[in-house]
Image (cartoon, rainbow, N blue to C red):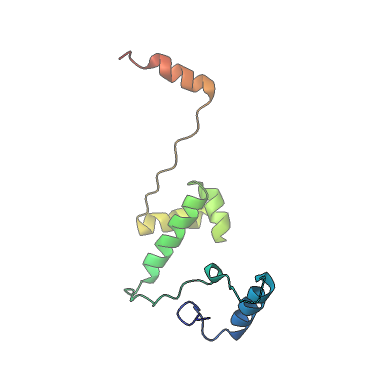
Length: 119
C-alpha cells in the first residue's frame, strides 16, 4: 500500500494509525483495501503573495456579510463587536455589499406582473 503521496501531514502519526485501523476494519477478505478517498490529497503549498491585515479584515467582513445575507446586525454579532464598529470598518475599507433582493410576497409578485407592460 503506497500512501506516501496521499498522506497530507507526515507529522501526524495518529492520523495515519487511525486510517490503517479503519482500513483493516472496513476490508473484507485477506487483501487490505484502504479507503484512499478518505485521505486528503497531498498538495504543495502554493506561493501566495503576502496578505495585508487590511485585506484579511476586508475578506473576513465580506465572508461574514455573505453568511448573514447582508444583515449588518447579524454580521456584527458573529464578528463579536457592535454594529457601529462594523459600519465604521465597512466605510473605512470601502466595502460595498449588495444585499439580496427582499423576497416578495405572492401578492407583490402578482402586482408586479399586472403592472408590467404587455409584450
